[in-house]
Structures are given as C-alpha cells and as structure tokens.
Image (cartoon, rainbow, N blue to C red; front, side, top):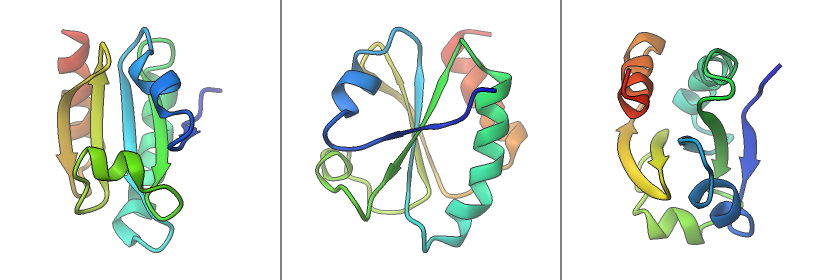
Length: 109
C-alpha cells in the first residue's frame, strides 16, 4: 500500500526536488479542517498513482523555510513538482476528480 510520505525542511530537496517522478506536496496543518478533509483523498490518490507520482505531506506549523520559499499563504495548498520545479499549484480543498485532472496533466495523460 502506497501512502503519503512526510517531508520537512531537512529532506525536502532530496525527496521532492531530486525525485525522478512528479511529487505532489500537500502543505497542511493539523488545525486546518479543509486539510483534514483532503487527507483521505490524497491517500487514495497516492495508492492509485503508485509508482507514477509521489504524494508528500509538509506540515507548515513544524517547518517554515520551504513554505516561505514557495509563498504558501493559504492551506491546504498543493504544489505538483516535476523535474524539481513547480508544475502546478492548487489552493483550497478540491474534490478527487478535479485533483486527478491535475495529476493526469503532469503525467501527460
């Protein structure tokens, strides 16, 4: 079973920017209700896109350097990275079908 992985300031470059496959980074916080609503959807997507896309979670309350670098002002905030660069950004809670369109676009499907 493929689940979202946790990333932080210390391992972000290695896990996200140097990844060979696209990475969806979920910038979130435990007190954010829409973030908590998005969590099970992201778990399903991590399973469905296993081997093609990595889903990572970044807690903005615990680490702020990377969040500041990408100007994260509102959460949930998803940035899809491809080849070490932001490919697309999704702010706010979105239904699974809409998120799949973004993921399919980064894969060229």
